[in-house]
Length: 257
Image (cartoon, rainbow, N blue to C red):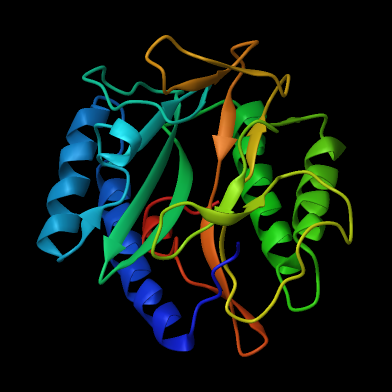
């Protein structure tokens, strides 16, 4: 059942999202060749807890870290590690913040130094697909309209659209109804109403859409080991209008593309 939020509840999610946005900005300021993703995880944990929040992911179904860190062919749910990032890598950082009883959730994929044109285009187009999806998250549309437009755009470039993993509602719980697939049909699925809060998160692969799970029980990677990108925002419908509650503006002080 979808839990529609009051304006007061959405205001609290907005506060959570501000902490999350600043945490992402801090991470962005440190990302470069040679840094380890365990360092980034510790940085995010310290910032979120000192800001009065809690990392949403840490402890969720046993996940042990603050950040989901997915490098190159890893799609989502990767573990931070002590392996330094290197020139030409890409890394997806997914993070959530629990604050005053509510969660926010967002993700961004970073190029490390100079990456190939092919990979940079994947990042730019996956990011654009997120905003095409957000454009469809409007009153009286259906959840299926979001996925339809994400999928149609990604397939223009023959990218693989991950189907096994989807966006989701969120609020008092990190994952709530409805599921928000990155594929679908126009007009299908639940109607979008005031008070809906959802995470829209296209996961787009350079090659096949097929994914597999690594032996750690968490990390999802592409079957063909080609790169994957992931961008995400938490979005609400407030007084008939669409509002992006999370922000990448602090990231874009360092990575703007």
